[in-house]
Length: 222
Length: 200
Image (cartoon, rainbow over all chains, first blue to last red; front, side, top):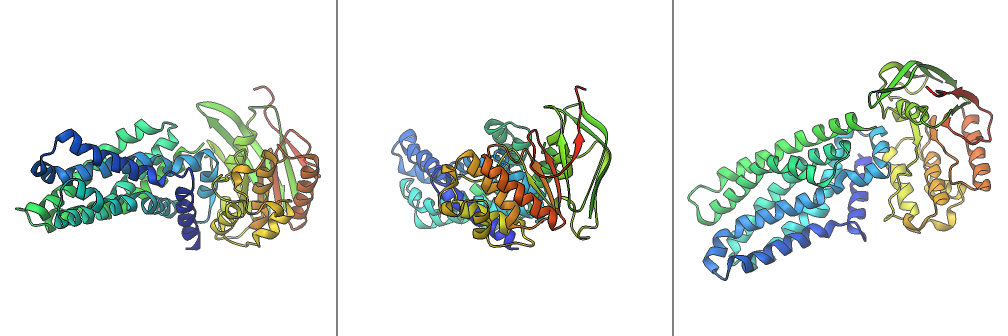
């Protein structure tokens, strides 16, 4: 158990230090969201209607942007070899790394959401609905993305391959995340229906992600 | 304790690196793996460490802890140092000590043994190549494991560092450990030779 705790602590510490890049995601999220009102024009009603979708899209792309850091640096400096050799099951180590990544790169997106909601003319209910769905949905993005990150490491292809692999798998999260936010704001669907499916997707990703990533790392190391 | 490899075949990228390789190392014995570049020294070490899957044959450790696999009882010191530049020397070592688990000792003591006691709070980014190597070697001391797999362990070390490391290897052998080292330079300890390849 301590091995996982120290792994999480180390990854968060590295992410938060200079050059760690935890805040790159938030900056990207901020940029996308701030640019939207300029692109769409000062139509407050339109912004309110599109707000949840814009926030979700921004958060999705921001979390994808930082995902390739999940395994590449450990692979390049040889740490991954030692993690694979360790007494901690690789699946658990992968889950711990994903959790650390979400805490350092995903959680700040949710914290930034209320501020960005103001710029999109969202009221308190809408903002909290988006923040709540992001809180449930972004871990799924990280855990699904982890599979792509592990494959990208073992195939020696970075960035673009990761996006191509992960984006299709993220679409259900996006659909139900936005649907739940919209349901909370304007109905007519009850909030609980899409939100439960979003929760289910997250839970499934917690199980499948670590196993798939660990299998990919195990078979792909050379 | 006895580390044995029987009829190991290694295929990488569709090319046979070596085949039918046998080796054996008992407690307190060091095995120096020598051979030209590309003869499969690193591949052999990674096979023993469980990081590569052999195409045929098997590697086994007899007389170790029953509930642990061979990789879990081995230290692998590769070309890459497994250090994070953003973390300090002590943080790097403490992480591996806690993550690897098992029979661990005080990281400060291990750092003193490899001559890095003065640099514990320095970020690893500022270390020289030789100091990085010393820090990796400190990992072998911070957690006790019976099998050491060393890939060019003395590269980047100065003469004093090589002597120091030879002393540490002798201590490890004296405690009944096993060393398998791929090397071009003399290790500075008594070791049996395992010759690899030869222009195949």
